[in-house]
Amino acid sequence: MSSGIRATVEFDSPEVCPIASVSATTDSVVDSVSTSVVSTPESTSVTEFVVDTDHDPATLPVDPIFSYGNKHLYRIDHEDVSCPCSCLGEFGCPVDRYFARRGSLTVVFYAADYVELQTAIGALRDRFPGLDIKRLVRSPVGESPGDSVFVDRSKLTDRQFEVLQTAYERGYFDHPRRANATEIAAALDINQSTLREHLAAAQTKLLGDVLEDGS
Image 1 (cartoon, one colour):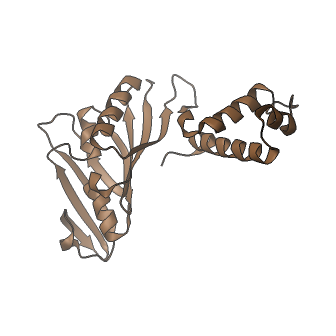
Image 2: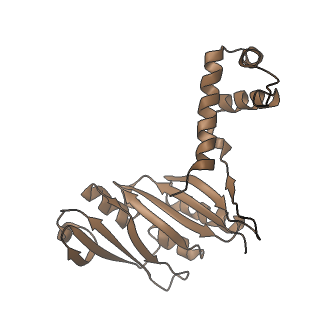
Image 3: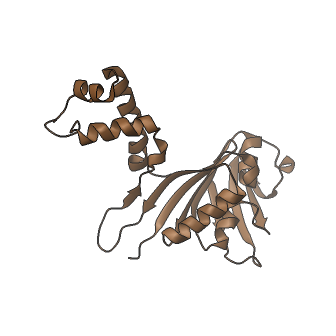
């Protein structure tokens, strides 16, 4: 099996995509989405999605295809690269899943390698400055059943990183411990309560990358 990277990114503005705009207008979650993204500017990307709302479909800025009760199916033809999914199509990055939640847009897509990922992320950042990388996962290689998760250390403040690094280097996480909380706090010139707060915050941020499912 060839390696690849699955990326989960989020955009916090409804202006980035018609689907995000619809979810903001209807105050709803749109997660039933299918898309056909193409890799050439001359072609058209097509997206269809379902909105469960009693909002009048005729008032929304997209084309209604079918309605049944409060569920409405819409279709969008992307004739330019004005939204993230069609931007990804330029770089041959297939979209696995995306959904909008009351104006914010989350996109899960695949890149063949780190170079393709950097190129796509760079283009997305240029066009949509509100992009936030939520999760990066490398697919398993060969017969390995696991995957590799990219842990974003930039989530930590400088102080959180210093506290975590000092605790690790002095053996606070070893079993049995080579240093206790009193010793680590003294080395950092802070009290034990502050030490525990920094450690808890740092571990929560890093474990979020490891344990979240990326959906």
